[in-house]
Image (cartoon, rainbow, N blue to C red; front, side, top):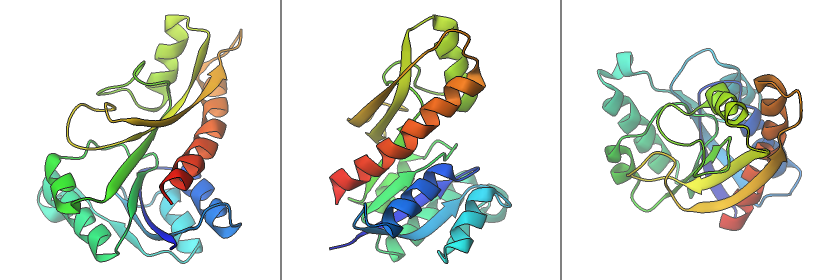
Length: 194
């Protein structure tokens, strides 16, 4: 049975595009049925619309609170009968009520480090890569993990991909190499759930 995927986005949508491409070329027995965002006017929404996927933008200011906006996203995901929710560059911490509303629907996230290192509150995007470079560790990478109530980036790990830290790396060069592995890891992790 084809896995129905809901994707939550906040930015460029390159991880979303990796999922869409894998569904289109048969690497995944899955289909993206809803893309939800916490920002309007972002490239990820344009990618979804070009692919003919329904989109939902849920802003706290339009719903009266962050919890209500997240509740609207959860309700749309349930109504879309998704089997898994993928946080693909979604930059908002989800409240416990979001997971309660989803019930037993799996939620996974891709994080740009080898968790548990460089995870937790505030560790997103270039902050993660800068912290990796400042620490002097010889490698970084990405982690796909389950998400639920509890510590940020603390859910069970599904898989990781390693990326060497090269001499002369800056945040942009390291981020670019990690992003390539994020795309692969996310597709592989979704495949594990089909």
